[in-house]
Length: 587
Image (cartoon, rainbow, N blue to C red):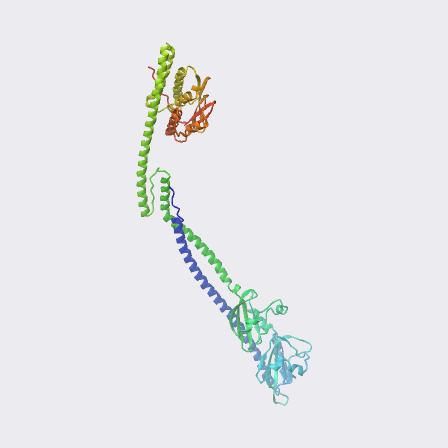
């Protein structure tokens, strides 16, 4: 009976359901936590970067205010020319320049470009050339108007060309006549302070801060030399679009967070650049930890799901195993399965059913064995009278011939044969007794057939008391005489050998030199599908069935035959513990 093919077991369905719900919930929680944490990290990184840029802006405003303070001090001194000498004013201004490493020089010009006050004695260009420079022209237009230039090469001196940032402002001063006149104050600054402000801003491992003027040109950049050498590029176009604010973009393959703020006094813009992969490094670590924890949770979930599903499905699988065992014919033990109430009740019902089936099967087996035994006993009863009739007929014939010695021999052999056949009702006798039985049978047949054949019986030493079911050799010998040797013209031979075959098997070999059988007839006997028309195979089939009935299907007869050569029959029975032979009382 074939079982239905179910695509999935209960354990698989339960495991999948529990794991799916648990893992889905875990993934949902993980996704929410990841989204919240990612948003928090991004927001904190933006706020932190913005605060750094604002701090730089505040410091730069503080610096520009300091420059404005110096300019105001210089403006006040320039109005006191009637009270202080030019030399004193220049001395005071020089002391300020000498005390500041970031200020290159401080000068006062009239509106035609002539120098009125100076903190340096370096030779200067003509007044007309000075008045044409940008820092000069952009500061004109009214008193108090000031201007911060971008970085440029100062064209003020003829012997040096410093790279500076220039502060210029139109101011009032007292001329030699004691009247107020308009002039232009210049303060040249190097990049020391601006560079320190930029380098102090730490925006991740490789982030930086740079400054641009209102025209979008770089005032200061920490990688200015690389930019000048075309080894580094800056995204000035994006920075030019914003006066202040925050935005993200991708430049040269890296996503950047850009913060822009405006410097009030100088009208510059501070641009802070931070790289998202560095700012979000904490997120990467969090992601790694979360993936490890998530993987661990998934593994634990699957293990728990399998454990729970196994616990639930185990009684059902055990009951299924017992049912399969019963289906294969194993009724050795009543199936009892624990577990929940439903499975336990089903198991008890199935156990009662199996017990009842086993009882019915035992009854059927017992009935069949008894029936088979009765059939074999009936068959044996049919064979024995026929043999007795033929033997007595031979005795009568010898008596008529006055062969007293032959009559005595035959009657004696017949008596011994029947004593062993009866054997006090036992079915098991020793090998020695079985061979004695067949020896007497052969003696009788040898007399009947007037020495048409001769025989030999040999047995390995120590096998005399091994047990066997009785009367299993005589039918084979009878078959050899009636269907083999009987038709020979020459002397027949029947050889009987008993020996052990490893492991644990006893072989009784009966060989004759009769006419033999062809393959078709031999196959009919071996398959036990029917009887030969002349009766060949009745005794063979009887012996084979008796052996298998007592010892099982692993034992029985092995036949081989060849026409005009003879037949070999091997009876294979198990080797068992020796028994005591039957004591025959002579009458």
